[in-house]
Image (cartoon, rainbow over all chains, first blue to last red; front, side, top):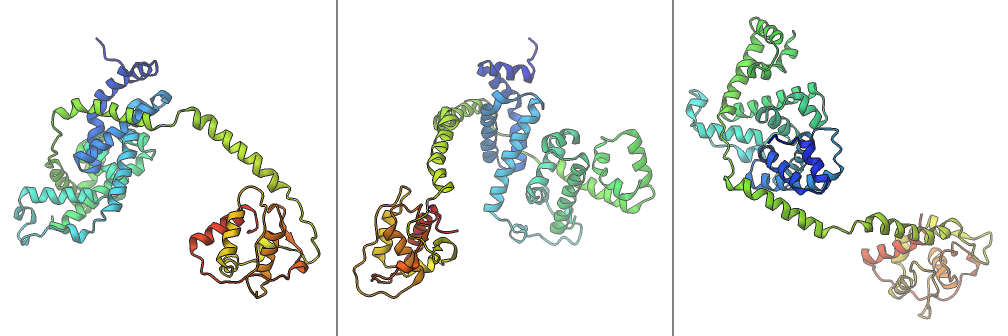
Length: 184
Length: 223
């Protein structure tokens, strides 16, 4: 049996068949989860964001007109929720760089060689966590989700050129932080 | 291609997502530009590190329990929502009713009797907070009780000892004592002021003062 398109499932839902919505959840739950997880950094927060995103989608689905494709629309809902949660988290738990420095052994003889792999990964993870909220979102969407810039531009309502520059600067920030911590 | 055009394309160059023409152009530039070459090497090292990051996936059962939990949340939200007809009809109707009551009084307030050339608009020039600080607690209480949204029908009781004349205060008292409808009490004849008034100074707290100011505001005595 051929898979129904997203719009067909939305129409089904609009006709009162909740199974249309259920199928959309099953279809996109993993992608929605991972974007939230990578922006927020924790499973618990990602779980909250995913539920919120699908609940909001359910409440608004009857008015979804299909001008954007369904996934773009859902993605936008998810990123808005994740960004808001991230901003609240950052405001609540202000992180100072000095507080998160990992004490290091002497790195005079080649930084990466002196650290074990896990320590290096921790520095990288912290560098990503410290990115400003919107920049982190761009980084996650490009690096992890591998979304084309044109798709990102539709979701985030920004220019392709601006997004490319933003992504590049995110990489440079991560690189700068890692070099500062371990000299790599 | 200039360096600043190259650098934003380097991540895509590393991921090999550029066109052949762009790849070729960047490759050529890198053979002659040490700075861009070092930039490329730095990013390649970063990508190597990023690619090694591990992400712990959620447990398998997570995906089967997510949908039921979403439906529980939907049900919960539905129960807390107002019936659709309330925001759609009842709230606009309530606002319209309020405007019908308030607007006529705002647009055409009546002039008080006995106004003279020395009449003054109470609202425009008083330091209301300072004025209220000088009134005693009984006066304030009476004003509070009688200054409601409906027309005011009462007067300040005054039989406690001597008073110190204070023009602003007297105007306000006169207004409250003589005018049954506060909407009309915008002009007061200063020449009629001069009766003994009680004066026990009390330090009002901010809540009491804001309460009075709010009520005076509603009567448009304060600009």
